[in-house]
Length: 162
Image (cartoon, rainbow, N blue to C red; front, side, top):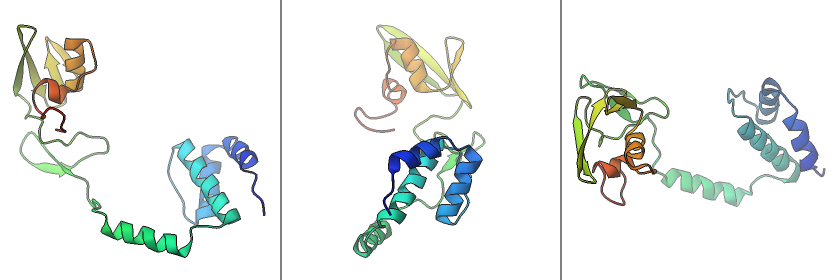
């Protein structure tokens, strides 16, 4: 059977999210709660193509399994250190770098001959009586250009990651 990808893609684009999830469950044999429409459409199209034209060869499957076995996979999310010293699992999208000083710390940087001070808060940063969500936002407010806050305040080695 020849699959008309363009026609199938157009049909999928017209489906609602519940209908896309139902189509996914029909094709993959398991439900999904994913709310990302482009991801769902791509996965469904891929599955339709695999069913119509054939899936991975057995050799490719074995090689993928070998690579997956060799991979250093994280099984648990990194832990976040709370202000009281306790730890808890990090939430999705939460910054977990240990290079970030504890709340209450004041970061000082001399920039264009002026000593600038930024206070680390539990939920952001304070600079000149304004709150910022990230050090990068503070650095951008100071310089007027996009600059890594970790690099600007000397918390990361130049060219490296925090």
